[in-house]
Every structure is written in C-alpha cells, then in structure tokens.
Length: 249
Image (cartoon, rainbow, N blue to C red):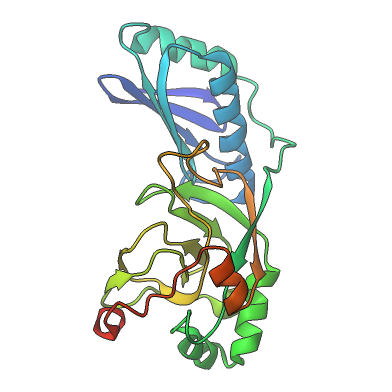
C-alpha cells in the first residue's frame, strides 16, 4: 500500500513493524540523488525523532529514503501512517540546516594510498593534484552502510572519480580512505572492498562503546584535512604493514 504524504514524500509498508518513506524533488524520480533530497531526508528524520519517543524503535535514513521501525506494542501501521502524514505534510521545502561540519584527518601517501598512482594516471594529473582535489571538496554524508560507520560521502570532483575495482580486495585496512565512482568513504574496520585507496584516517568511524557511536551522521558535511605520517601515528593510526600485499592487489 502506497500513500502520498505530499508531492515529495511517498510512504509504503515495509514489514510487519516498519514503514518506508521515499523522497524526491518536484518533477524528479525518487531514484535521483541530490543535496536537496538529502536535506529533505535530514529534515524529516529530525522531525520524527523529536515527535516520537516510545513508538519508534529505529530510524534508518539513506540517500532518498527513511526506514521507520516501530514498536507494535505502542502503535500500529494505520495510526503511525496517519501521524506521519500530519507531521510531514508541510515537509516539502529544503531544511535550512546544513548539518555539522566534521573535519577528518587524512594521511595521503604512496604508503597509505596505493591507488594514488593509478588514479593520477587515469586523470592525467599528478599525485599531488589528486590529493588536493580530494581534500578541497566538502562532502555530504548521504547514507551509512554496508557496515556500521561506513559513511557514503559525495561527491568527489569528477576528475578523480574512479570505477570500483573489477575484483574486490580480500582485505582493506581499517581507516582506509577510498573512492568509488563519485563517492568517497572511510572504511570503519578491516574488510573486503573494491574501492580505490588513497589514504588513511586515524579516526574511529564506529565505536559501539562510544556515545555517539559514529563521528558523522546523515546530513553532516565532511572535509578531509591532510596530515603527515607522524601526525597520523600520534593520533592513533596504524600502518597495515602486517598484512600481506597479496591481499591488496
């Protein structure tokens, strides 16, 4: 069952105790991702968190949607749908909130970013120019997943946009700063991955014991600040020299 809340928000049942809100710009398909839609998602997310205390179990915002997981002991689909319709009816303009600006330190080097030479060759730029283009940009946090703390940031300068690797690496180190298409991200933990590696960040992107558990959230803005190797190590960063190079090639 699909319900139009307004010309920019559509609501659908997603499960026994969940609803999905889909967002779009006026006259555009919901699959189109824009900063305007991201701001709209952020605005709706904040409104729902402010107005629902015990009824909502979890909110999972993404590029152009919010998954609303609710407590069946507190509310049902029908009543939640009606409350969301009333709350979000006028939520069709871009929020004035731009999100926090979060600065993340980045150690860019051949040692920490093995794909820098390949990106530079592809872009017909020097490695230093690639680094400058990456750290000059201010990125929006569009979504968080596939793993806790993996924030999808966009958009990188199109001159250094790179397709994902044909064969993903078996191991990408924790803190790896990477590019895939026009997105960039920091790997929150060692994992397989097919993104292009350009540096390392010493900041924990996910810590289950910390509050908040992540340094960024959807709607925030991120800027990378270049640091040298010594600063990276002093901030708690580790170099993945204990991992076989076979895992990275």
